[in-house]
Length: 258
Image (cartoon, rainbow, N blue to C red):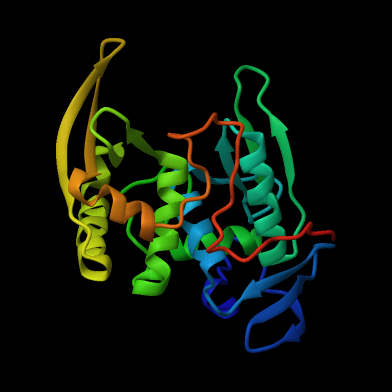
């Protein structure tokens, strides 16, 4: 996994491997003080984090004049501080890296920021995205019955919704993600026999601008089955956004100290 994510257009290929096991590679870049752990095995937590980044994450890359290597940042946004702090612990337990959490000055949104190029590359390479998201795909690593439900939970917990009137879970994404929603529909049926309606294409007109959207949601008949199978953590449709009730299907996470 470590060699798979390396990209000499992003980071100088000079590193020291400090530990190499069946589960992970612990590595230090020559010009960095950080030692990080790059997983070799995709756990339920990693599958969930991939879904979170696909949903409310941003993989920023910006060229610099003083170096041929760009500046990278992994950012995750959410209006629940508890949820952001829980994700921070999950990231630290998985990658053993430093991060920071702060609140935006102009709205009620919290940000989890990671400034490590190897962690950035792990998500960028496995999700196939950087900067703006176009044409998302379900990573091959989670296209199985055991892991896909965690990936989907990460997306629903961040970018999904629950319609209380119709009692359905759904996703509304940009128009370029139609095939992504089609993948989700097919995999839900293939692995769990859960019927999803759509995806449908549409447009939204706002502030004299036209936005293309696509939508996918559960058939109401399958909502209960969806709740039982998909291990959602942040149930924002049932409680206030500040509440967090980790799903018991995830192993308990202790504080992660570096």
